[in-house]
Length: 336
Image 1 (tube, rainbow, N blue to C red):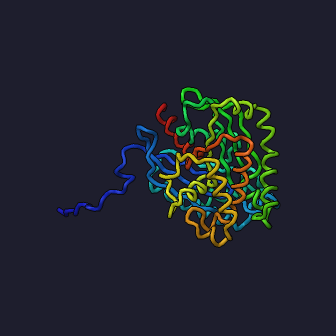
Image 2: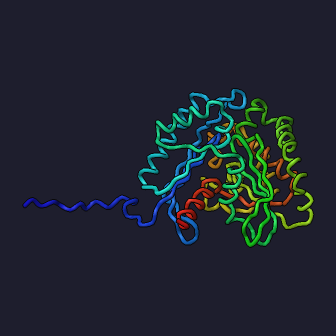
């Protein structure tokens, strides 16, 4: 009789886990982000994550196509995500792509190429679905005592804004808009002299022109004058500014997510960043080399929002589309 030695190696975390894991992947114009999580009594617990700046939409404003280099960078990142999804034995996953893929004429070719290389089926979602998911992911940070909320997500290729009534702590969307400007697309429209006063003012003015119809259509400024309006921002721009304002030696989500950032602090940090040479921005632990050339475009979009709707402060959300996806997947699984 042959004896077999027992396998004393610790089991893989996925093997020990009894509750199912879910995955959400958000492929934007600038970033590729993944969250893998398991349900918990207060929402979910993250078991794995990934984020990489891929700049999929680089140059798309002028060319209308995804470049070969951008697609290669992105597929490399998607391979990492696919490996993490397999390793965590994910029960259900949703992988979405946003503005860059919505715009690109070669989007179908890229999606098929990514599927063959990674096994991931990218779903190109509408701007409305993107805004809805972002709002759902941020909803736990809303103040239930304030009846109105303006929630925005400054992305790489677009900026989504939702105007919502808050009822029993839950947002009910009254309207949304997707502006065709994000940190990449706006930054590429002002490639030279973005640090200059005139160029920066031009960026702010261009964004405000796009905000005005949304404001008028829903009477947001009128409602704001009566009080009871809160503002919540979900994007790399607001989290970066919060990190710089807090003087963090390295970015720390636990200190940034949920932080209340005053408009005065936003103005101060924006002026400090505008005065920094590019090299200094690259060395800043909360900006970094990959955001250094885009951060001022994000500041301009944020300034336009703050000027039009002077609420006085923004609740910072280091969460958004991925969290919205995860909550929906877990809710569907629970009902099933």
